[in-house]
Image (cartoon, rainbow, N blue to C red):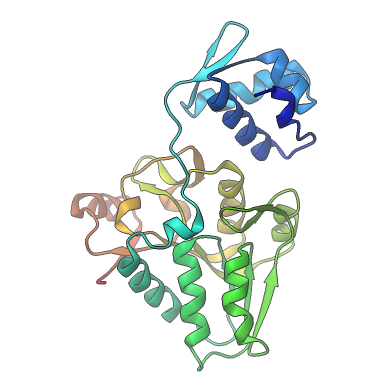
Length: 269
């Protein structure tokens, strides 16, 4: 593949680094000069990006360029992911939705479990005057039926088609203008040392912004996410208020979370 096929300049930093990582994965080795030309940035900036990626332990700097340290995990599409651990996700979503009262403002992160949270919220006919802000198109569609009881706000941004999510450059500035009561955050990993992490760098950046824009940040994660650590750092355990997960998650990990100061709610499918 010609590297020029990847020309996407200008891009936000997180999205540029994700595309850079994809390019390194495709070609196995990429030169600094090629990355500079592809992304329309200086070689100094390329080296800074590569240093950041190397710090996350996903690439290895070599003379003149970079190569992958190990095979990148494949991010499943939304449609593939929503069927995995479906019973757990449904129980987690039901519990999460039960924590929302009338008059609440909610940031609802993109993801399969958070989409089920939206579905549960829509089924709560007792709720009135709820404001939901989301960067997930599937979430917005789930909540369309709630209007006018709910106000549904969709952030702007660049569409990631497989996840139906909106990412920067427009999402972060929008979130900087908002402060909500609660956020429900999805992720790919929860670990006592690694904290809350995500496979995708641009989505991780949006999640980080959501965590800092609310009074209470709640992570929703099924048992497959427990003990996992991925590239995009979202938050430390101490930055979030509650983890809702399945009772089938490893007991030792949940005990470690609690010992680290994180409140954990276990639900049964």
